[in-house]
Length: 302
Figure 1 (tube, rainbow, N blue to C red):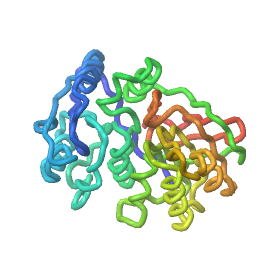
Figure 2: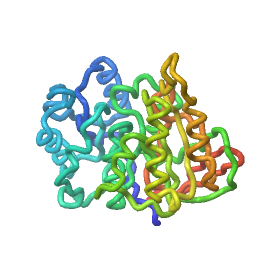
Figure 3: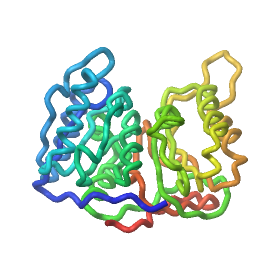
């Protein structure tokens, strides 16, 4: 599988649009503070109408959230899209959606958690995006994490990440990061990517160990893990077992469901819903060392 096309580097003066493709916005202070960080780098920020609306647990009705995405993606002056928050809802707006009919020019799309569906859908048409903090979490990132994201979209290379190696040797492949729960619900749908030659990177939040077990078992039964070259695991935040109930820990579940695949695996990398959410480019070539626990970003910038 070839690397996805990485959008052209951002430069001061470029226009970035803010959309809310998923859940209703609640963290207004953090949202505004994150916007100011982007503005401090010289970017023009335009907030889409209705971003602060809500429709149940969604940011607005599907057609309105889809229109936000279409408007931003088709705008020739817009160079990137910043997602307000995760939650749930991005898969709903991908029904009857076609990236290429809305625009043929690659531009940045930045987010994580529920935004996984958009990142993976864009990967399916050969365009790279960034699995990185949304606007409700970006301001709370440590300085190194903020700089990592800002550097990557500005065309600079980023450092390798170090975690806990489970063994399995060294492989190269195309990085495909995302939230485990959202990614699992793409299996068997038209949004499911081709996993040939892919290095998966998973994280999750507030999922009990038995739920993690159920999802990973679905991945095993689907047969797609035989196409995958390696797996990276980030934070599984607030995924502790319920009290006073017999359970495995989430670490035990991950080892049990993934440890026998015979491929390089690295855990405990600093990305996900915890205190550190290192930006991970989607669809770029990486090198995974399962023995040393290192993820290197070796893909060329296009």
